[in-house]
Image (cartoon, rainbow, N blue to C red):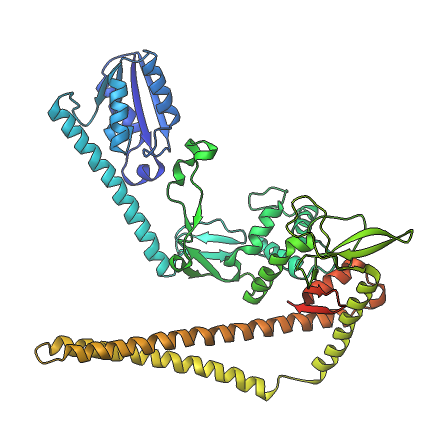
Length: 506
């Protein structure tokens, strides 16, 4: 029986015209008039790997003696790698005749040399195609183009323009997710609560399914694209194409490239950058804040830490003089606990009342200050100075760059009279100034960013104050609503054994 083998990958079919129909037709012409023909076709499989359904079946049939002749359009249809071509041709020829449509295959020294040369060229060709495609995508990205559809929820890919465009039906859900996470208002508890909320509302996922997993919600909250920047070349996927053919332990994982290799592309933002950064702060704390559920509700669950030993304080029900009471303690009795704790403990009722009264006092007194005062002239001048300092440093760096270029031009145009040692010393001096100014620039930028973060945190505090002061009956707030308020203002509350309580703002 004669076997006809054909293979095409999606990109080859589009670019090289290696259609399966054409390959089969030419193979049949080569076979002549013969009724005993079996077709083995791999549609959409890369020639880089041996693990292909039709090829595997062909190899088994050859091994079992069912096939006496194998016809293939071209050696690169068998494989794009010379090593694999030689393995396959040797394997087939032990039990059957191997014939190619567009080349002569002879088992002579000259024939094998030519065959190996063709295989090496095919492998080189494939590598060059991949290199050109990768370089082309990177160049487009550097020009501000989105080069492929990353299927980001909330966006649609415009292939013609190379842009991500906001898809409003999904963008509304993204904004809702960020709102529920940064300002839950008693509606949800953490990421898992958001997932259940979306399912209860019947909101479909990107694939149109009704089930939202907490990991999907978390990925949305962590995706920088929503703040207005999409990164190309962020992930290294080299070698992952063959993962579907490998065992679980042999698969190559996707790894993150160094940040300096990422290529940023501006896209229309769905959420404000400050909101995104605020969400990242909350994400760092979310696991501790929402971990586990207890029979009793504790107002300060996930917020407390011992200032002496560093352990978190958790709520528990304990017996004291024959009476059960609720308390917070840093003692860890669970197996594998790294730090058993220093024994710091305090009654829930006492600490809850103190913390809540502190919060209420902050809301009322700060609310009065916000209502009465605006930003001071001194603060405005400080901010203007930092911005002016940044502009001055950038101008100085530009002058150094121009001075260096003048020195290079002078050295090139006056090579016969120039004092190279003097030029080299001047270049060193410029380099030293540049390094100093670059470091100074980084410090000023960090100061400006910190100020922006402080202003945003102050804005969050002011919004919280407004929300609290609009409450009809603050005394009747549920424990969940109180928790939401506290977590919007405080990142952590540290309790010391000497009775000191330290509040750490977000």
